[in-house]
Length: 176
Picture 1: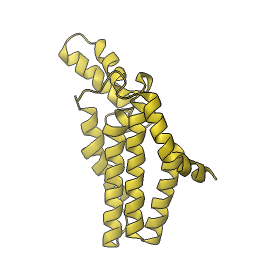
Picture 2: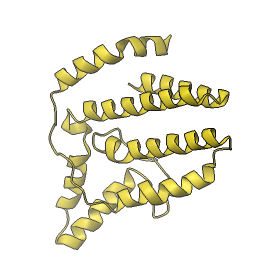
Picture 3: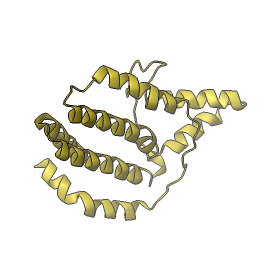
Picture 4: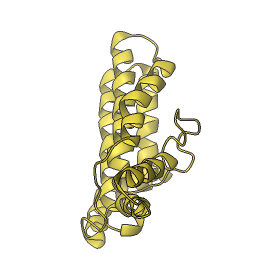
């Protein structure tokens, strides 16, 4: 799926470079689809899921406040690593739940802002985006309290088979 995502990202970048709004929209939708499918696949194995990590962190706490503080730190370590995103994605993980609740909204906001700039025929504001994504996605996620499954959501073989059928041709052509 990484090769497929990379290929779709390259198509998005190329379309943006050509200022081809229609192709950029198509490529961005295809990118987000891969992110969603990756989350499904990761969520079929407890070793690739966010839920057990957060539950483990909370389990060390004595009382609600301490459990909440430990969960915040567990979330922070795998995302922005610091109160102000000092080392963003330094210890990131490819985990089900993390992909859908954190990375997908980041990618969605990114493509939205790039497409808006393309529509307006202006330059993408990277600094503005960085500030916006920090305040609207990254920081709120750190402070989130939503729970995530601690055991597989779907069958690994079934999801793998489905995604293999869906992406094998694209993955093969992306590697050539």
